[in-house]
Image (cartoon, rainbow over all chains, first blue to last red; front, side):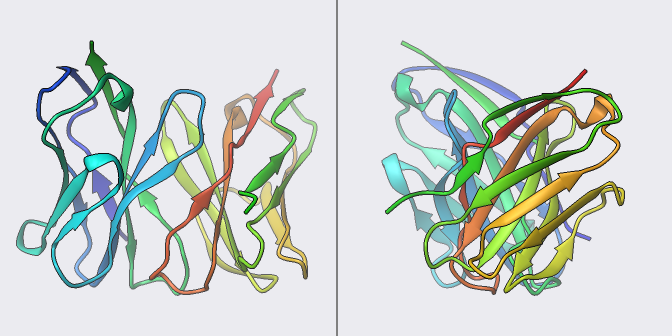
Length: 115
Length: 114
């Protein structure tokens, strides 16, 4: 079975600060990795995804994530956050042990950006 | 292009009743997955349907069931509701059947069991 851990449950930053949210997964096979964001009152939206190739992936709104296979990690980064980045962020994994689109999510990280 | 549509948006049901939630995927998408989101357990996978067949199932009791129609629309049913079933139920659609694709989520149905 696969699992995902997000160690930071709540993060508070000031605008222009740098962001790094941790994500570690537990699965020995091939994985597809995702970061989703849920703004207040809105649906889950995809920030970025990793399927294969360059382990540094860039997403929307200036976000990027790095896949480090040896550490089973897929941390999310942004060099300078804005107030509008206030949201909950979810890391998710889809392992090759299932034939479909089953996602296992981490517990989420609530980010508050102070203006 | 219309997104994933879930109806109804809000529901209040009494313990012991049953409920049916509906999901219309993005046009052309054939895979539909359902998730339960609660403050305590987070986002948990319920099941996935592809071409009217259930392909994956999460660790939920048999009271939770679903189906998919030939037009890819999906419904999920919860029978004999319990207070703990109160949650946001999310539907996601994907264009293909394999894992190398992303899921697009709907706004969810907020179910409250009283």
